[in-house]
Image (cartoon, one colour):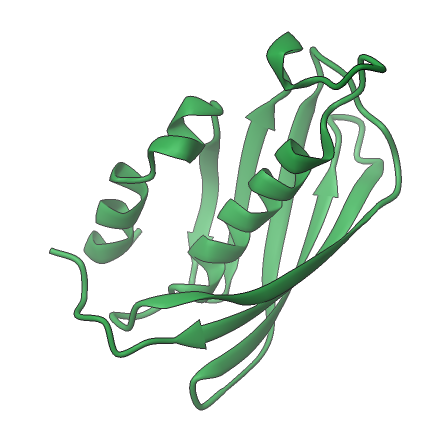
Length: 134
């Protein structure tokens, strides 16, 4: 993990609070896991879609911040394919599709602990002129 990325994740209170763990951190590729807790479920006792999006978004953020430039989301879409519930573990695998100039396109597959696909996420990145984190 690069020093700048470590700083980014050290400051990411939301991901830490959600129990996320970075499993893979390579340029253009990241894997993040997150256990689903009771307080992450909706009124149907299913994982709230916002939490599925959150783990995908964190993996996307790591994958697209692959050098010293500060890169942020320009947009993202998610398709929910399978419901999960408390006690399960989500795994978000983000991969760069293309990076050109200041923009990039990344796909994230979210699976459960059995390997079943829970959601597909596509993120669009924008490299900013912000100074690198210190």
